[in-house]
Image 1 (tube, one colour):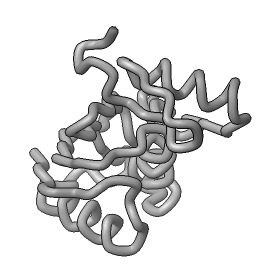
Image 2 (cartoon, helix red, strand yellow):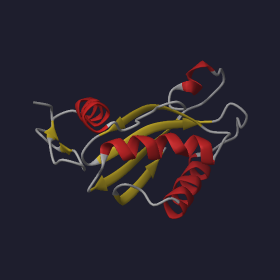
Image 3 (cartoon, helix red, strand yellow):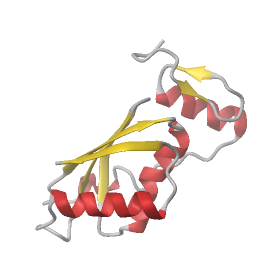
Length: 132
């Protein structure tokens, strides 16, 4: 059993898992879900990126959909790269940076995250956004 007990629940069949990767593996195998991280971690190779930590306090999280939602952030804002994604039952944490914008601030990131939350219905209830 994972650190949080059986907190990750499959939206399709109700099966519960202790770790996010267990749920993602189940979703792929049992339900044929497409769970891709094609943009997450791709920015690791860029030099000069100053990552800024983003922490979303959440509830009612759907882990597989949340990973897709974070991944889509890099499509919405093509100048951003996302790394170090952690999805927990009560938090979504990741680092954001930009290889082309050295002057990107925490306030800039917070503005974009809030805008993204407004424009794209998240698969969780967001209680608080912390950036920095």
